[in-house]
Length: 217
Image (cartoon, rainbow, N blue to C red; front, side):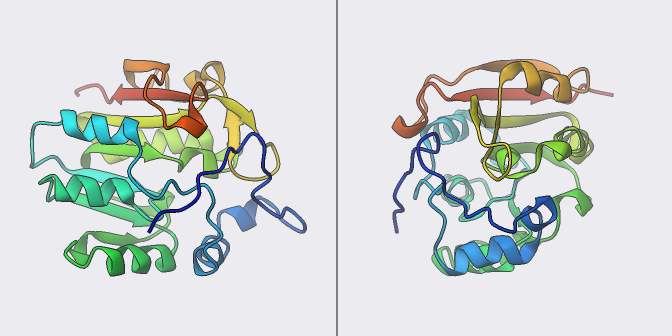
């Protein structure tokens, strides 16, 4: 089921009346958006940057986490491509239930209903797709540290970040490469941190692609 892709730079997709940062991090806030299908940020499919990155992976045993996954198109694609150790994490049970209904063959044991910052496990790869921009900017440094802690030595954080001002008072929260670098370094080693060349059309010239490596111990 495809969703309309919205140009975030032109459309205010959130009603910000009476909203605050705690609201943006609550389960009820996100679940209510899924229950009402009020999710115009959703591309309705795996986006090109993540698809091509998944296609480049060689080890089907790679332990992959997709946090704040929402409809988790990337998880569906990776699992269908033979990666059995894909884990989907979301604070919204509604989002997880929607994904499970759409992909009944995906193991329910790999669906994690939890706050990202409370999750404890170890992964070889974490995929980023519109989770970072959904978090209030005050949590970005904590996001980087948590990603570091969830990765095994030599593990990678890969995906896309918006390279756009977007909004300051509600998701999606924007930013730029200069700001983002201060959160990730010196925690990670840089593999890729550059303009995304294969963004979907509504996000063209408005994304960075990253691949960051947790140094081996």
